[in-house]
Image (cartoon, rainbow, N blue to C red; front, side, top):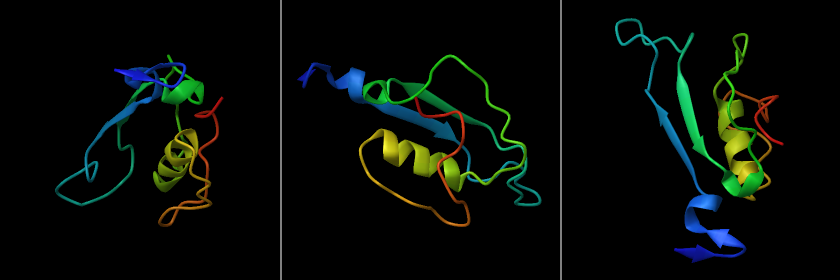
Length: 86
């Protein structure tokens, strides 16, 4: 599907995650996220990031900014998460 200077997939991001990392305790520690796509070239790809306990709201801020929204924070996290955006 053509979109702008490329295709729809060139400007897309897919996020795979769970609501919590441990369903028994409902913690968010060591919660895995998979982010796939180019996001219009705004996202650094091909890496694993250790967030050192940062809140996942910072990832959502990074994704929002990659998609063109100037979001300052999300939930209890500041943002954006260092190392995600180009």
